Amino acid sequence: GDTNQTASSGTGTLTLAQAPTQVSAVDIVGKAGGTVTLTAKLVRTTDNGVLGSQVLHFQIDGVEVGTGTTNSTGTAAYKYRIPSTMKKGKHPIKVIFNGDTLYQTSNDATKNLTVN
Image 1 (spheres, rainbow, N blue to C red):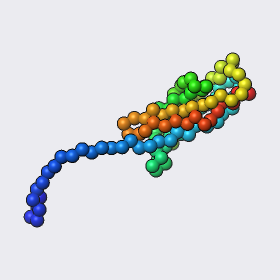
Image 2 (cartoon, rainbow, N blue to C red):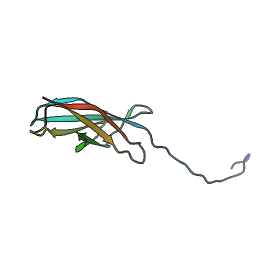
Image 3 (cartoon, rainbow, N blue to C red):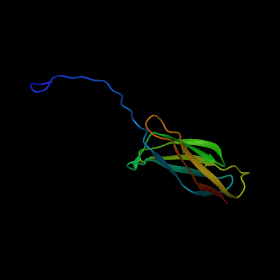
Image 4 (spheres, helix red, strand yellow):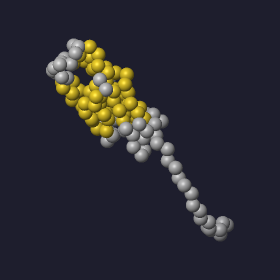
């Protein structure tokens, strides 16, 4: 308080909502037996702010092949060796962010690895 107001106190609950996110993967082309770099970017959708130091999970044909940690530009990368037995054609890429206490989960399953 002060000379005009009396002191007061109170209690309450502060609830923080997780911020929504968006993962954006990239189409890639490679040869069976070769190596490609899978990449994806993670942003907070409320202001398009990039999210560094977050783990993204990369899947090919529905199977997790590895993880990458986002850098200061929100981009994660994973070097993937294409199995020599992988058939030619398109193989779906899915990149998943599992979220945390601050950010909601998101994923992108719209891109492909094309094996020539």
